[in-house]
Length: 361
Length: 135
Image (tube, rainbow over all chains, first blue to last red; front, side, top):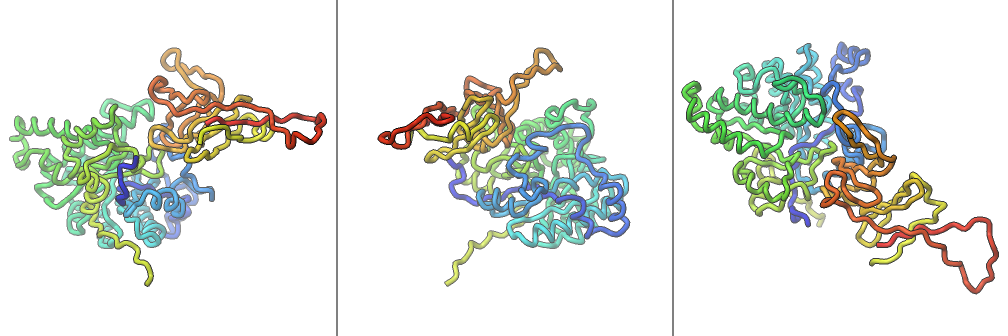
């Protein structure tokens, strides 16, 4: 039984891939074209771990033309955008998200520009349902801000994309040039999992084990943003946490609120309870939706976490742990359903209501 | 409508192959695993993925930590989306065989009907049975 009842959805996490580094070469300066031809891009997601599914993706999402899963706009339309009634999909890339880990800042900035230009030309221009987040070289916040200023005013650029793995927690002043640009351009900061280093206690042995650490990185960034007073300094900034789960959030907020009452004098600029800042300024995507037994237990967590305000649907198409819009959540009350599956994202990403197709007279 | 559904002739459906058949509203995957035929609903109970398109594999268990013990090849089908694994012969999930399963359907091998019983027939070289799915 479909829980959506015909409602169009806004999918906050879709992954579009290149067919290979050759796709970006036309957008790169000569020096980097030569470098990539000789040495490859030098990027990697995480060294040494396997993944799930078929090389990380749904087995049925590999296009027949031989390109990687996610590299065919035609297959994405046919397999996901059309049948899943996607009003808008937010593209969050894949291979190039680790550029903040690159030691050569100029190279990282050039790759970010090239990725963004490729995404605009090959995905956003041809498909009005797709919007993109700008990759930025966070290792140099001024260069990152420059890239946001370059393309961030376009209506199809709807966020600034950064990875969970970071040199410093995202509340710190080091990143202020990025937040200045986000606020000037009206863009949310969008954090996607990836590039996480070793855990606090060392390296996880297995991929399945390492995945469990994603919420830990998000907790660090949240605590940093709260206690550095990020939203006192940037009261209009929205931050989206993608693919890090949701059910840990409300209990984490209880923890921060309790400590704020006791220890808040260390950070007196945090004038309100931490949970208030998070409910107002932070959004979290559903996938991979935790699946308790019975699944209706999620409704209790949604109440604790104010999901009607804070939760946004994401499929993660075409990764193997893709969440079906129809079957990954329990049935929701109508207003919550509208907000979780579309309206919260419409507000965060500033997306106009799409006009239905008008039949010719 | 429930009943018999002829899938193929045995000779056309060799070991190591599979077919997806549509029976009314149901999509069903029929497998030939080392000469035995099995049929499972082509819909994963998790999120509705096309289960019978998944890879066949051996079960992998552990007698002790860090040791792997392999069962027979092709005993399990692995869902092409999130990777849930089900016994091909029974439809039972690996992780909770008592409560999580996908419907399995009987498959029998039957003699083909004669083309026209009134016409005299004579022995021919090879008798090729029919793979019949019972839904």
